[in-house]
Every structure is written in structure tokens, then in C-alpha cells.
Length: 271
Image 1 (cartoon, rainbow, N blue to C red):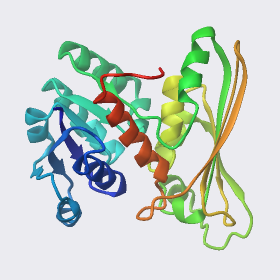
Image 2 (cartoon, one colour; image 1 turned 90 degrees about the vertical axis):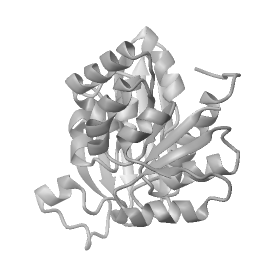
Image 3 (cartoon, one colour; image 1 turned 120 degrees about the vertical axis):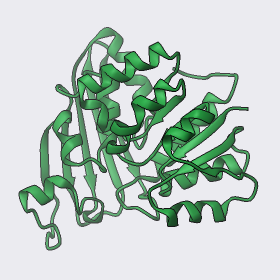
């Protein structure tokens, strides 16, 4: 049975732990880590069957087969290389960290050298399977439009840098339009889907991202539009935010759980 460790005990991390604990994911929850001892203890108190150890990321990589990162881009930058160097597979949710080409190349090289894998769930967006297929024939353009409630955007580095106050807005406003490489830095906790789409399609420099603050909605709405040799693809996803963190869509947690279930299943369906 695969041994799994979890870095980050927020909403997504806790949902992963509960899915393993319930048996929905057939794996062993070996260890968990978070800088917040309160969050770690909260997760432990909810478990009925698993008894994971409280370990730091390096310790986790020594005893786990797979570690799931659901903490931050900073955690990816700090912990991903040594985890892979220990021959441990890694699942990355904070995919925005991979916009750095040198870092991406380092992870790829390290994973190859130590015979391990890096997994990136589709997150709070649909269509990554079709996008990867379409990319084989060539893509002309990929645009992601993200519309979020104000509460899901407050505290973003971009808003702080530009001194943008969203507390008094009455109508939707376009906060950002530009390449994905800049969006994932400006909104590191809001647009990891843009990183995933970039990796599946035409890259961080060519993928166009639009971020809209909308005081009149309660969902996180993502629209993906793609043009290429295959034709035209357009889809819209309306995600409920997680109960604990308005910056995170519930679907992001479900996507991670689904990928873990697929990894542990001997029968694979889809690309």
C-alpha cells in the first residue's frame, strides 16, 4: 500500500487526509506537516483510523512513497528538490511555482535522476485532458478568465502593490490582464489553475489571463477558451469556494483526491 505524506493542513490538506482515513483512497497516511501546530492537531483530531506522524518535509520524504504539497508556492520552491532527491514522488498543487523555467528544469532533471514522478492535478478547472490532446496538433491561443468574489482576492500581492481597495466596489472590475507568468506571481493563492493550463498548453508566456473582482457573486468562476488546429474549445466552471478558505475552490480538493485515487488504482481511464 502506497505511503502518503501531506504538506499543508488547510482545507485541501485536511480533505486529503480524511479521504485516506475513510478508505476512499486506498493508501496509508504516514505523516503530515504544517507550520501551524493548531492545524496539524485539528486534522489529527478528525481522523478515526489513520495515525500519521508529525514530521517535517525532509523526514516525510524518507518514509513516504508520495508527498502531496498543498501549502504554497514558497513550500514548493523550498521542499520540492530535496523531496525528489530522496526518490519520493511529489504532487504539487501550488503549480504557480513552476513558472520559473530554471526551477521547472531542475525538478524535471532531479525526478529523472532519482526515478520519481511529479504530479499536478487539474485543480479547479475542467478541460485539461482536451487541452493536452489539442496541444499535440498545435494551439493558436489560450485564454483563462477568472471571476472571483472580493473575499477571495483580498490580500493578494498585486492589490497591495497597486494599493487597490476592493471593499467599496459595487460593480465587477477587471483587475489584471496579461500573461500567466505574471498572474501567478501577482495572485499566488488565486490562480494556480492558470499555471496548470499553461503547463498543459502553450506555456506561461503565451497564455493570457484575465482576473475580475465581482462583488455580486459567491462562486469562483473560471472560463477557458482555446483556439488551435483542432478547432475551438470553450468552457465555464462555477466553483463553490471551500468553507474554510474563500481563496480556494472546493473542486481543487476534489481534483487532488481524484488524482490520488487514480494513482492508487491499477486501472487507468483517460489521459
